Length: 337
Image 1: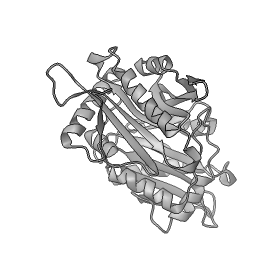
Image 2: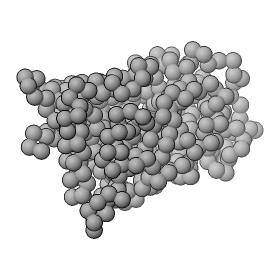
Image 3: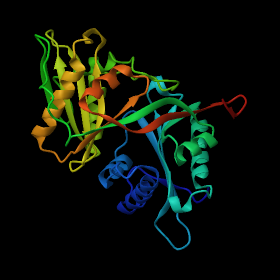
C-alpha cells in the first residue's frame, strides 16, 4: 500500500484533474452514452467541500510507466459522525481506469478502505453500483450484497408538455426558492423531512437522519458550495405546515441533466395529489429559470410504489438499474456476514 496517495482536504488543481480523468474514463466505459459524464465542477466540489457531519478519506493509486501525475484508480470514503450511523459508512467513489483494470488496483483501494473502517469500528459499508456491469462484479467478488435495488428514471423535457397546470386543495399554497432554504422556512421544512422516514431502505444499516433547521441549511449550503444549483417547491397546508415538497439539483449551472433529489409528501397529507402538484410546479419553475436542462433523472427504490406512481404520468422512462450494495463483517470471526 506504500504507493497509495491520500488526497487532503485542499487538493491542487492537478490532483482534481487527475481524479476527474479517472472518473470520466470509468464513466465512459461503464455507463450508457446517454448519461452525461460528471463535470469538473462536481468533481472539484466533492473533493474540496466535505459533506456535513462526516469525515472523508480520499485515496488514489498513481499511474506507472511514464505517466507522472496521473491516477490509475481513486476511492472516496465517507465516515458518518452522526450518532445514528456511527457503525456504518459509505463509499462515494471507487473507480479504476478501464485500460488498467484486472491488475488488482480496485482491490488494493478496497482493502485500504476496509482497514480504515475496521480501525474506526465500523461494521458495514455501502456503495452504489450499476447492475450487470463491472461494478457489480467487483462488489460481489469482495463480499458486497445488494441491500436495495433501484431504477433510474429519466424525463425528456422536449417531450414533456400538454399536462394541466398544478393545482392544490383549497387552502394550500406553493412556496419556492432557489439555493439554500431561507431561515424563515427552515423549521417547517426540516419537520417535513423528519416526517418522511418511511421511505424504503431495504437491508441498509444506514439509519434515517434526525433533521432540524440548522442541519437542513448546512446540508444545502454544502451542496451549493460544491457548485450545485438547488430548486425547491413546497406545498404549504392551511396551518402553515410543509405538507409536500420537491427538490431538484443541477451539478453545475450549465448542466443539461438535472437530478431529482427528492419528492415527498408528509403522511398526514397524502392522498390529496400533492406529489403531482409540486412536481408540475417544479417543471414550471424550471422553465421560468431558463436553465439549459433538457432532462430530469430520478432514482427510485423498486419497492417505492407511490413515487413510481407519481412519475409515470409525466413520462419518466426507466433508463438503467442500480443497487445499493453493502458489506458487513463480524469482528469476532473477522469475516464477512
